[in-house]
Amino acid sequence: MGKGDGGAEANADGGSAALEVELTLGGDPAALDRGWRAAVPAKGVGAAKRLRSTYYDTGDFRLRRRGFTLRIREDGERLVQTLKSDGPTSAAAVLKRNEWSRTVKKPVPSLPVAADPAVRDAVGPLRPAELSPAFSTDVMRRTAMVEVAAPDEGTALIELALDSGEIQARDRRDAVSELELELIEGPASALYELAMTLHASAPLCIQTASKAKRGYVLAGGEGYAGYKAPALALAQGISVNEALGKIFRACAGQCAANHDAVLDRSDPEGVHQFRVALRRMRSALVVFKTVLLRKHVAWLEREASRLIDLLGPARDWDVFIDETLATVRAVRPEDETLQRLAEAAEVERARAYEQAEALRAPDYTEFLLRFGRWIETAGWREAANHAALDQPLAHLGERLLDKRHKRVLKRGRDFEQLSDADLHRLRISLKKLRYAGEFFAAQFPDGKPRTYIRALRRLQDDLGQLNDAAVAERCLKELLDNQRKSNHLATLGIGAGQVIGWHARAREETRNRLTEDWHGFSATEPYWRAGAGELHG
Image (cartoon, rainbow, N blue to C red; front, side, top):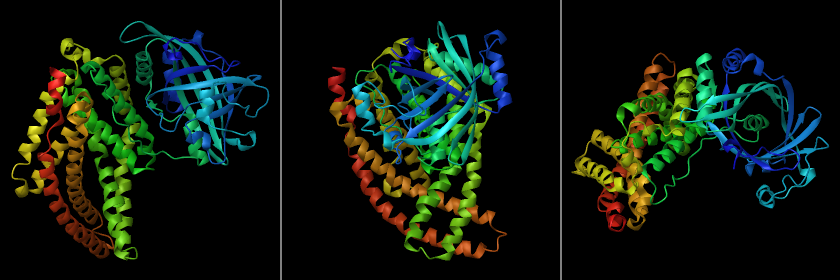
């Protein structure tokens, strides 16, 4: 049983494992102090203490690449060594990770790092000489225990830790100003309940990156990379209610895992995957609308749509610069007009990314906390038809998928005659069908879902290339409008003409392939029909 489930604490001397369940809020010191005072009675405040930690790794950051961090912390007169399975992608709003701690006599790593042979195998062979300090943290911490009524049932015990200080790697520093909520016992929904109370007293933001993550970024061991969520595993026979929990939890986790990449502007995949998570969530709301009360999920659909639109321009410029324009520049690397065009496009991209700063705004934090609480309490069950939610997922699949499949076939009728606007609408319908198909695929294994989804993806990719060309034309128009007073307008116009001409030729090739892939898809038997007999017999 994990720590957050009422299990035992990690034993600092014996090196046992514990499961942390925590949520971290960031903000300026004054806001954090107001939040602290709103939750902690004066008599419950513990004394502040200084915590200095040094994180160790190999020169090539091998520990981190294997998903572990190793630190030694000065805790009063004790030195405590802790190994955490804190991989670079474990960035959900509520973090759950294992850790192994023990006291050591010297401020250097003691090997082996864990008593459990399985953990040692996962870490891999280490020699003392390989390990050296990668970065350090120096914070003042105040702690307090708070009892919170959970929104669903019961109470929870939560430890609050108010940290202020800095992270240091070589000559680089990053300030620490955060409030960590760690679940000691009770349901995780209480973390969100308390966080919402804190946020109401002072505007705060979700802190998805751990101190270790931030330290490794400072040390040059990694950056804030976009994160593509693994395929959603909905076991055969799962109920609708269980499926909704897994779907929404995966969407929230994917958003959180890409949060820092979006704000850091370091990896275009961050914006893309953030929007994918939101579209998948919005698609789930539509697919399951027969069992979800619209008035209870309208806020979720509204916020998902707002964020998708907000990050849309950044995604458009990422695609234009890194894919559309890059393709032409690869063929004509010395072309000055394309170089000027690329420089001007970067200015437009930076302007579009400024909109992403909304992820630091209080209303976004409020949405994330509300969404997290809704997931932890299975809020979709409120006033819903419980019989419909408790039925097997497969019982909904055939009818829902048939409806979306027929809509796609209707939009693709007389395919060769479809206009660009018609193809765009078809692409949107295909995207919705693909998300729905992925939700239900495991419920119809005998229907060979991979064949159908592969044909669908191929067609969707073709339409996506046509859409990229349309996005490029829109981006170029916007760029030239914004540069109309520039001394380089004529040069930019020549470069824009080359990009449009290049992709006009590619567009014709795509149209020819598209027709073939459309007929291939429309002739593919929907997998839910092929497997329905055994499932419903």
